Structure formats: structure tokens, C-alpha cells
Amino acid sequence: MKDPQPQRRPENCAFVIFGASGDLTHRLVIPSLYNLAAEKLLPEKFCVVGAARKSMSNEGLRDSLMKGLRQFATRPVDDDVAQQLLQCVTFVEADPKDPPSFDELRKHLDALECSRGTGGNRLFYLATPPAAFAPTARELGRTGLLKEDNGAWRRLVVEKPFGTDLASAKALNAELLKIMEEHQIYRIDHYLGKETVQNILVLRFANGMFEPIWNRNHIDHIQITVEERLGVGHRGGFYDATGALRDMVPNHLFQLMSLVAMEPPTRFDAHSVRSEKADVLSAIQQPSEAEALHSSVRAQYLAGRIGDDEIQDYRKTADVKPGSTTETYVALKLMIDNWRWAGVPFYLRTGKALAHKRTEVAIKFKQAPLAMFSGTTIERLSQNFLTIGIAPTETIELQFNAKIPGPSVTIDGVEMKFRYGDYFRADPSTGYETLIYDCMIGDNILFQRADGVEAGWQAVQPFLDAWKKAGPNGIETYPAGSDGPACADELLRRDGRSWRKFT
Ligand SMILES: NC(=O)c1ccc[n+]([C@@H]2O[C@H](COP(=O)([O-])OP(=O)(O)OC[C@H]3O[C@@H](n4cnc5c(N)ncnc54)[C@H](OP(=O)(O)O)[C@@H]3O)[C@@H](O)[C@H]2O)c1
Image (cartoon, rainbow, N blue to C red):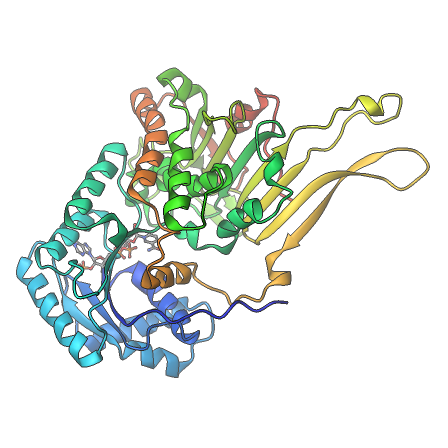
């Protein structure tokens, strides 16, 4: 088993979290900072400023973050490391509707930079509801907190969702780019913090054997699956205004799709990688309204059982409108209009309250000609899939045909499976550590650029428009705890294909 490579410490900086009292801060941001602290990967001189609208004492915030850490840490909490981290935390009341509060924040940061010696580098993390992203950035701009001067860097991390459609994503990009430069903006998609997702690039481009066959001549189609067992739980209000398509496709599923489908970048740097990712997303075919309805499936879950849990109808969830048309499941067939992928469908599916939790990319290769086996008992060959498993286990799996031992020629489908955990030692993580670390060292390769975000929304906009027009017509249902709606199977069956079964 191999240990990870040693990494360098980031430059000294102040880390300001807007939304410090919220769930994301407690569940993911602080546990990630804790993991970085435990690995000695935080700057030597470092401070955390927690900001929110409701006032809190420094001690109040530290206690609350400590409770969060005990609940959400991904490894046993070492009290010394935790105390050292939390002693760096102070609270500031900041409300974007109250400009003087941002002037106070500026004074607070100036004072901390002197007392803690953090040197003027600042990372601002927007862990607030999306409605506060632009107003907070505006106040940071007005107070000069984002101005890069005297060699100090100023960076802004923007959480998802980045917009709710193409127009709102463009408006948010335009607003942010009025205030700061693109290189200062870190649009986060936590899927890119996952090792296996990053490894898609390495698998494709650091191995000579895959790229020559990674095209329409050899690949029949590609399936991208992100299935969750959980229903919407107590997030009914948020979910009903969002739905599976907006929540998952332009961000997480398109991150996977763009890594699988992009052209080789000339260099492994942020500019080249992000340009290729944006290019391939912008080559996704724009369907007409009729085509969008024909090549998509949307559905809602009905009551069912998942493990020991009874799940009620989606429409009966608290804060969900009784006649809601919001989808909890979506499947799409997308085509990419370029030389490499012409004629190769990408089937995407994601949903809630399903039988399994799994995330995977499955690449189905074209079938070998059967002709040479005529005259034998072999009537069919198993499918050749290369599958990149991201959750629940991180794997790479190859399915191929092998001869069954014995005097006659009979064939069966077999598989070779590589499990990350068997080969590399990695401490359990939240998935945010790499992203936060990269932001502190100024590497934005794993963050989305404005054109990439807009290309993603552009690709899903025809579906949003067609569904809006169709209203409740065309919404299917599936029982909670099932594999999803039957019409998702039909989407592939009519092309003579089927979804890969979960093994
Ligand atoms: N929770 C997760 O697991 C998760 C995962 C991925 C992405 N996200 C994203 O992270 C962001 C935060 O989510 P969350 O779950 O942490 O939400 P949350 O628990 O509701 O916390 C929101 C935080 O923002 C502050 N806030 C609320 N309204 C504000 C406003 N108008 N202006 C400034 N601050 C405001 C709140 O404190 P005050 O009310 O005192 O200001 C609170 O600290 C959202 O954009 C969400 O989509 C969350």
C-alpha cells in the first residue's frame, strides 16, 4: 500500500467564512480545515474569521464549531489539533444589507493581519444561501477587501448552486467579474474534490492504451449514473424549487461528463484543462422542444421502503407543493457534436430515494464481430464495459469475455476490478480538503471557470424550457426503493441498449 506524496504548506493567509453559523461550515468546511491541520497542511500563520448576520461571541462560535467537529469529523478528533485550530477563530457580524458591518470586517481583518502575521492574503468563502452571493461580493468589492495589492492575493470561493438557469448564471458571472478578476473566483463543485473523479484524467491521459480507443470508432455509448438512497428529507422547500436536473446535472454530472469527453489538454494546467472542459460542454447538441421531451425522462418518487425506512410520497413531504411537478429523478440522452463523439450517446441519470447509492461512469465498447464464432455454440458475447466507480467504493472495473475452462469453446463475461483502497493509503476525508488546499495555494484547475458554468446551463436549458411548457404532462413516478421509473429503461431500450446493472 502506498502513502500519499508530501505536500507543501500554503502561504500565510486569513480564511473568512460567510455563513459561519450554517450547516456547510459545521459539516464540511471546519472538518476539512481540521483534516488539513492534522496533516500540517494549513499555513504556518493562519486565522479563521466566521461571519454571519446574527451576532455571536468568539467563544459561542468556537463551541458550536467544536460540536460540529465532533459530529462530522472524518477521523478521531485530536483535542490539541482541534484547540489549536479553534483558537484561530474569531466572529464578526456581517450583513450585506448593512454596509457598515463590512467596514467593521475590514478593520477586524486589518487588526488580525497585524496580530497574527497572516500577511494580507485573504480567502473569502461564501457558505451562505445563493441569494447572498452577489450582495456579499459587492460589499467585499466596495470595501476594497478583494483588491490584490502589495503582492497579497484575494480569492473568493463561491458555493453551488451557481445560478438556477442560463440567464441567472450569466448574470452572477457578470456581477462577480465587475468586482474582481476571473483568476480570483473559485466556483466550487465538490465532485472535483473526489480522487476518483480527478483520476479520470490520469486514467485517460497517463496511459497509452485507452486514448486510441476513446472515440466513436470503438465506444458504443457512455452511461453516467448518480443514484442516492435518501429522499429529500426535511429539505422539501429547497428541493421543490430546484429538482434533480438543476441540483445535479449542470454541475456534478457534467463534471464527470466533461472529464470523460474532453480533448487532451496541451498542458496539465488550469487554463488548458478548463478550456477543454468548457469546449466539450458547449458542443452538447441543443435539442428542439420535441427532441428535448423525447430524449429526457423526469419522475417523482412514490411511497416505498428503503432498508428500515418508510419513505412517503415526494408530494407529501413537508414544504413540497401538493401538485408539485418538480422531478426527483431525471434521465437524459445527450449527443456531443464533435469529431470524437459524433453518434455516441451519453446517457445520464440521477435520482433520489432509489435502491442503491452509487456514482459511476460506464463506458460501453462496441461489440466484437460474432462471425468467427459461427459454427460454435456461442450465440452472444457479454458486453465490454470499462466502469469508473466513484461511490460507494472507488474502483476501476473492466468487463470482458473469457473462455470457460473445458474442451468446448464456451464464453462467459468476467471482470477485473481495481479498488483504490486496496492500493493507496488515504485517510477518510470530506472531499473538500483538496479544494480548500488548492484554493490556498492558488491552483484553480479543480474549480469551474465562467465559460464552463455557462456551457453547462446552456446544455440543460432546452430541457428546463420544454418541461416548463409541458407542465405536469410527462411526469412519471417510481416507488421509493426501486431502480427508478420504467420509462428510464425505455430511453435506452428504444436504442437497443440497457443500463448497466449494479453488481
Ligand atoms: N450543507 C451542505 O451540505 C451543502 C453542500 C453543498 C453546498 N451547500 C451550499 O452552501 C451554502 C450554505 O448552505 P448551508 O446548508 O450551510 O445553509 P444554512 O445552514 O442555512 O446556513 C446559511 C448560513 O448563511 C447565513 N445567511 C443566511 N442568509 C443570509 C443572507 N441573506 N446573507 C448573509 N448570510 C446569510 C446564515 O447565518 P445568518 O442567518 O446569521 O446570517 C448561516 O450562517 C448554500 O449555498 C448551499 O447550497 C451546502
